[in-house]
Length: 191
Length: 428
Image (tube, each protein chain N blue to C red):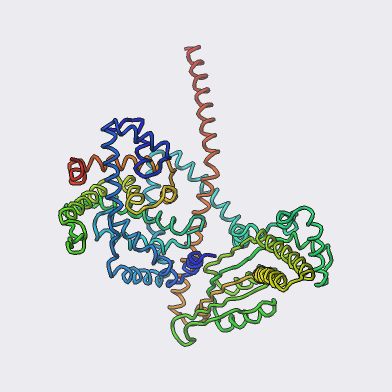
């Protein structure tokens, strides 16, 4: 029996410290997935807490027919999408987020300052573009291109075929490209 | 825009998933086609940038916040959650009923009366046997291997697969020798060869009254069955308001597992139960065959050792012998451990103390009254839930019939209508 299975079993019995151990390896990745999905730290925090609470309350229903990580990411993805839909329903005043989390620390980089700034701008642009994609494409792009999951893992997590994953990625990347046409991303390289 | 026929290839190419041949084809193409070259470049740029996004550190209060919430959820017992969901469900019923009533009064009345009769019949017929059947079924569902008869012919696949044909005879002879030592005949050896090896274990949580008495009873009972207690731990004190809990890990002979679980379940209210079975038959006999193989090898090495002439040769053979013996020891140890696990099932028993219900007569006891009211309420809700479950069942069962009946009815109705119309026409 693998260590993780053992933890799952203990957590199912209500052992909270086992649950804590069990999720400790996933917290950061789930948080990052949510962060890229919403491009906003506040939502990422709320959603990822909600995700782990859901994992905790529905652990008893986890039948262990897939790996724990696949099951966990499935919950993560569904929760992100639900949260997004709920958020759209609540009519909120539009709040422009000024994202300044990538601090520009010039001293620590080997690149020229101009290049570094350009790269940071490209990252900001792509983050923003990703967070405006339709949700299905967005989640595929985040899992594949940002978090580096394999095609089969993604198709397991989303419970859809490999072909669907491929076509969502295909459309997602084209949409990103279209979105970023006028941004720094390409202008810096295409001369 | 890129050329249509190259789109797929471009996607594979930018992810590095192309074959060498495909790579050549595309690279030739983008030399001449500037659109596709642009497309490849831009996609590569996107993937590269997306991949270079850093992993953001968790906010420092992430884990503490989360665990605080989880602890508070864990301490709130489940019933709260269930009832709120239940109430939400109840709220939605009147709207549903009035809506459907509004649309078609006659059909609604007919459907409802059929449903109500059906539900009552099903519920009443089930209430009696439901509780007994349920536990049996759940055991079978969760571990189908358990109920499979052990007498099912098990081919000696594992041993014959491992050995060349000419050795099989030797092998069974060896095996027989082994067991003869243990005072068993060749026949029982064959029977044992077929036996399924299944590790069974169970987790069970029970609410009990008279906590101490029950714990003693369990300890005695386990002794009686020939099992033993691996560990036991009791939390909380007898005087405290909060209930005590006992975590007992038991080993019980597999043959007695069902009986033991029945006894445990009869002690109180079961809050959760899990029975699992892991079939290790294949692995077990594979290992057994490997042990026999190695023993033969050991025998042969001993023979060779007799023939050795130089010290060098002796040392080499003894080295080899040593290796074989270590392997035998490890594998035999594994077999013994497996035997133990198969023979003695692991049971994690979790007892939770419950206040004994005090029966008082005479003076009106408000607490008692409210407790009974609560109990009555719970019983009623359980009955309603049962009713709803049966309702779902009846709807499911009636649906196909209703569809066929509907189609037939429509058909017959239109035929009759046409017929009467014709009659009307023929004698106006």
